[in-house]
Amino acid sequence: YRVLHPDVPIRPGIVRVRSVLNTETGRTVLANSITLTPGTLTLRIDGQHFIVHALTEAGAQDIVDGEMERRVHALRSD
Image 1 (tube, rainbow, N blue to C red):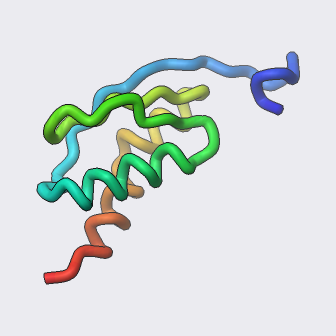
Image 2 (image 1 turned 90 degrees about the vertical axis):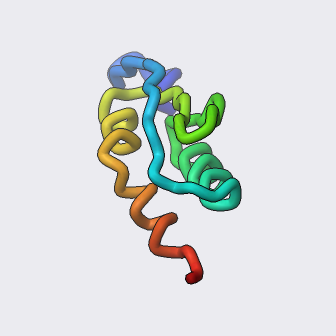
């Protein structure tokens, strides 16, 4: 809808975000969570860095703010 509707602005962009998650499982869960979020797509994981495409600045800012990463981090088992 956002892409096809002329009145809904999009400003696609790519952001690079560093993660504090130190396990492959944690980073995979975060990448999948980002991709499941409408308007965002994890393009690549390079060590601790994620390359993410977002359709809007707000979507990119949500990734940069790290709320999803905090939630994934809370799922870990010690």
